[in-house]
Image (cartoon, rainbow over all chains, first blue to last red; front, side, top):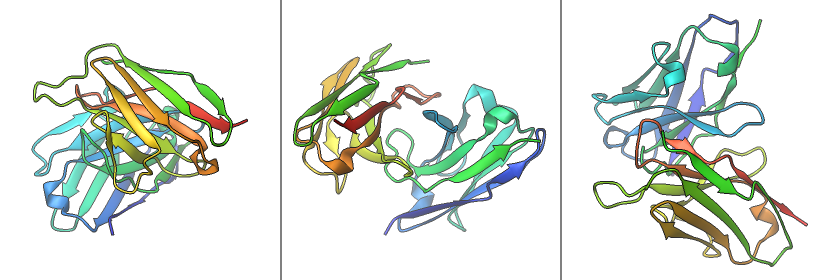
Length: 116
Length: 113
């Protein structure tokens, strides 16, 4: 069974940092592109970043460039999102998903709240 | 960036009746590899998104056959042949032909009359 489980969300002050993780099982992680999406409260879906199988290519939405870093550990079947200089507008549920052009499995999400 | 526009934004439907959602892209979604990376996702209340259809018309594993996708180029449609109560929720089209960025439609809320 394919599983993606996000963790690391929580309440953080503006300007603070958080590191999200996504633990995967049930498929070959090392051969899969991986993607982070987010959904602000009551809003639609937004792509955040994705990473190639070997980590050699990474792409980010403009609003997080220079602040967020996507990474992966293929030995641990883990996807990460380091989020620095957080802003109120980063408040959202963050989802990890398998794939890039077709994202077929999604996690349940982890809530990040940026507030003082 | 490719802009995705969905219509309608809200769709009240009678149980057992068909429903249709349209999605239009600001540019052709045909990739140089010949594929068109247009997906449809469903998000039930309080749930994460779930893939329904990929590459215009391919139904994902476990998706009921009452869901179908069609279209080409810049115009795409998701159809539900007979709406059931469990189909209530938000539906998004997503393009990944040209990324970054991957972009979504605004979402269409399907509700029962």
